[in-house]
Amino acid sequence: MRSPQNLAWNPVVAIWEVTRACDLRCVHCRASANPDRDPRELSTAEAFDLIEQATTLIDQNDIGFSFPIPNVVMKHYAGGGPIPEWWGKVKGLYLEAMDEMYRVNTRAREGNREFSLYIARRCELAAEYLSSIESVRKAGIAREKGDREMQLAELEKAVESMYNALDALSAVARSNSDRGVIAVLNEYGYRPLKRELETK
Image 1 (cartoon, rainbow, N blue to C red):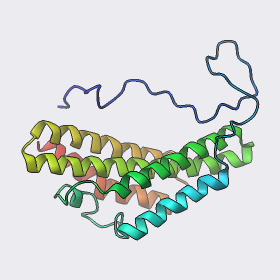
Image 2 (image 1 turned 120 degrees about the vertical axis):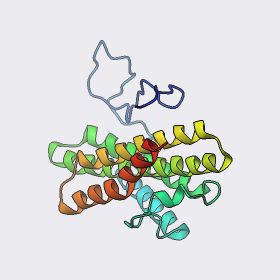
Image 3 (image 1 turned 135 degrees about the horizontal axis):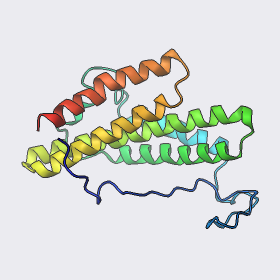
Image 4 (image 1 turned 60 degrees about the horizontal axis):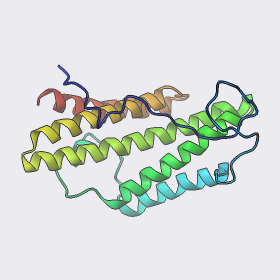
């Protein structure tokens, strides 16, 4: 049985505006839309650069961080100290790139929408995966300290984030490679986390 949701960890509503550019002037809309992009918005090239920066950070710090091996997720539950600073930087880069790709998707012509949505969802997969790994590490730290309540809360967050990662890619899977990533992440990420949570 799943415990009641802790609303401090799981908000009920999230509002996310990826762009303020809109050609419409709907009376019912509360947004202050403009026909042009905000000058602070990233270009598509800048968004792809963020993805490259994230990849480089991972390669420089832990090239085996997400290798598809049986213990890829649960090794972080076994301990390993505090969460490395670079995890947050990588997640931030993926989130920023994801925002930009969703923004591009709202303005793209029909032929380009599928591609920009695919890239946005791949970035979402990466950000959710990192959120899951962070929660797994926090659950392991809580377990070492004997804080069962925090351990369970973090495990629940890890399972939810891993599910969201799988869902992000499942929504746009277009090749056997994508389906392989889903299968591996399910087998080596989601299922072990779910089993661990159910045994607690």
